[in-house]
Image (cartoon, rainbow, N blue to C red; front, side):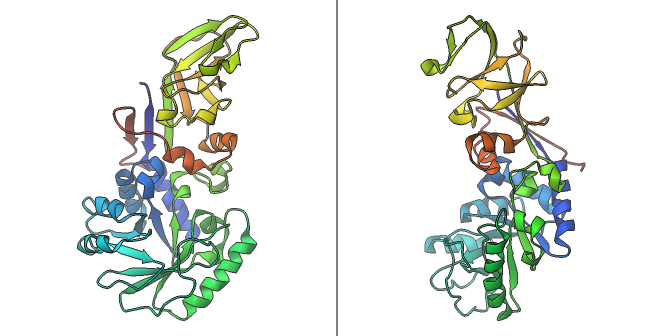
Length: 341
């Protein structure tokens, strides 16, 4: 075991049911873009649909077409910009697309995207919906920390939606689904919470969520540094005393970022900090004592949260998981809970 990723579909289904309960009648639309935030889009999409999700949401037409094969009857929404040359593929695959500028294309179900304050993709003023327009959507900029601005966005969205009562309305992301009831409308597009990651950067258990992904490696070698000796490029860690270190065969090519130096992992069930420069294929941890080579190293899981690593480097938890390399040439990937949860 060099880099081992474990995906718990039972936890995924429990998270989905938790969100459906919270939505109180609004539909759960599962956001599985970017290979389901690094969790594996095909596995996650199937489990989410089994748990009651109504729509699969991705960013690109190619992502959507890739899911059409295994999920022939599912509604799949491509939320990103669609190029003119991609429209035939979208039509042939029976996709739904989001449109936020220009004319409304024909022959494909369309969700009009209204920019209510995000300042990114979306119409400033809605065009008159054509017959093939089925939905109205917006994107909330601050639902995770500033409900006042989110409320301003929702007011703009609500005013627009009232003019077109036949359209399906969806605005809520994970944070709004959990904290802003008035954002739920007809559906909520949930990604991060579905994976048991906190949209607030906190412990996901506070919202009844279970992390779906865990990531482990092992100690490839253990050695004792004498005072003045160092480990890694640049000699960024120099031992001040006799120090046991373990070398873990995972590095930034696998998703253990260079700025993870100083973050904590579990070694034999004990928290240990990474030291020295993270290399492409390895990093070092400071050990409390001599431990045997082969001992398990948990990078995410068993109480080590993606949120901790995110706070350490000043980013968000789903950037952490989406960067984990799951290519079978570099990682073992195990999917469990296919029939439970």
